[in-house]
Length: 395
Ligand code: AMP
Image 1 (cartoon, helix red, strand yellow):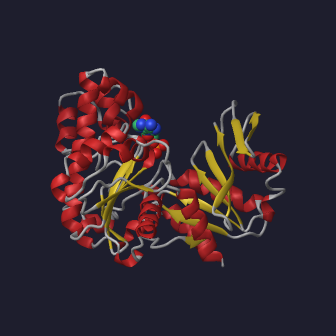
Image 2: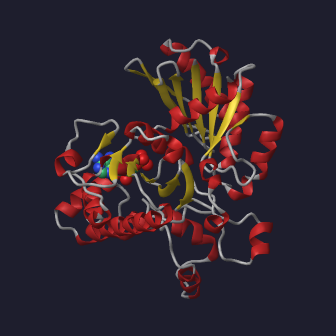
């Protein structure tokens, strides 16, 4: 089966073509600067790159170019040959408890959720509508970042604000990166030979955006992101948890205005705000040279992570494994060494040589002798998870 996975934003579309009989990706690419005069599209397949530099007026034109590039590379003659298209959508709100085959009603519900994700859902909708008109009669499936966390109990997803206000405005914790948390927890259960519905874990998705999930019996029972992807861990440019009074105080001091809050907390804070860069590789190099601000940023990142692991250990009870994934989680051995080293009293013990070994990039266990909780690195594969959902819902 050939499944195409689309991740559309307001000005870009990432795509990947997967061959599901082998669980492998055969082409991937990016359409960017949609709506601007200087558009760019590229596709990588068969070890080669295929490109276009031209104006890309809208998502329809973007997908038509993608289609041309797929044909030119020889991997797909036409979108109508596909067995289905999977669409990543950031926010499913309270309306979606699972992935769904796209219908007019599904589109309406995603539109209704726009106020919860005004920066993300409109781009995804533009991608869905364009793909439906460019691909004939094939099935389309939407997969939401929030759905995996819909199993959180109410005590975990409510904020302690007036209940009627919370209900009226759908203000609650939703959680994000659900596709990644689900993929790595299922993959880890398989790797360890534990039945998924008996598997307890803490999944650490650490990339530019970062979140932690508590997994009990294979289900998400808590996660660090909330109404939006701003809550929780310290991220590349996002503050994560913060006392809301900081904002009112800074407004009173004339430092920021109400209009600037979103930008201040989402784009100017986090690792970038502390030390001037959001790239963990640069931070690592600066830490080695003794740079004070970079060391503070790194230590704060690790400390917040350690606190969440401790909290979620309390939530989950018996814990089988902690699982690192995402650009930082999969690659940053210094971060893993520090966080795990400070959790030895939990029974988390990693072997230094296994942690530093860069020759194995696949699913791996980092345990040292005597570890009672497994420490795994599982490279995330959201596209494969989305494509598997398309297969599951259209079989
Ligand atoms: P993602 O959002 O999952 O693509 O992850 C992006 C983050 O991963 C950035 O902060 C990168 O600096 C970080 N990253 C990528 N490779 C490495 C590496 N080898 N060591 C440390 N951090 C890395």
